[in-house]
Length: 245
Image 1 (cartoon, rainbow, N blue to C red):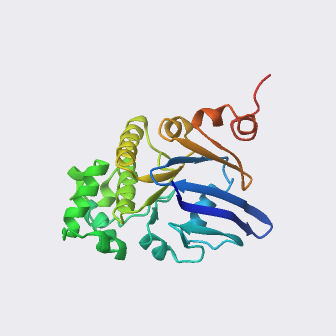
Image 2 (cartoon, helix red, strand yellow):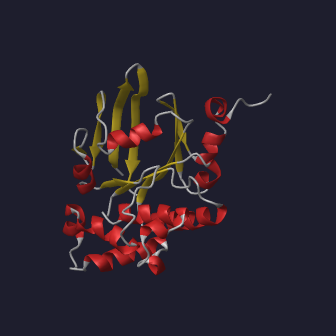
Image 3 (tube, one colour):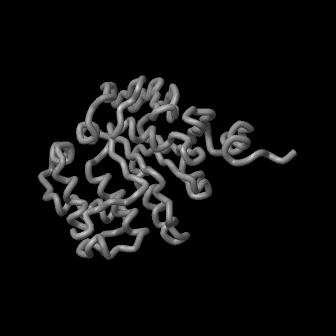
């Protein structure tokens, strides 16, 4: 199967800091990939580069065979890639339903809504998918943090992306909320949703993903199954801590 996302030799420096150096990655339809590394390793920089929020110094990004390296974020969303952020930033004075309805009016969402469904009906379906349908009329500002995370994902899903990028979705969640999120991600994946997840909580991440990419100091040092990564000496030494002899 051909890759639907190709990242080729992507590099970005901020002043004298090389945030990312010659980063390569391929993603195929239906992949569920984890991305790990220490704080400041370059993981979010990858997301920012491939979604158009910052521009690379060199390298290219190809989405479904189309070069998207220098497109704006909304153009990339309309071509099939959407994301969440580490810091949840929703329309707090709007209801849960209204928050998800907003992206239903995007160019991509309207094009893909061939059955003529009303935006509110589409939004409800995404809220059901993520487990928030019973909260549809609640103001976003009144939701607990775990439900805000879920709402952020539902909002990203409402653009009907080919690839969904989740940036530390488990951050700040308690055990119960983390379990709800895990179940939602598993449901989406079973339906064929392609996802890349950045996460520091390895226990939650490694139960979900099929493969893992490890970044340290802006460079990819390993890629493989969760088991391979956890037994990789480079990863153990550079990220998880020096293995005791």
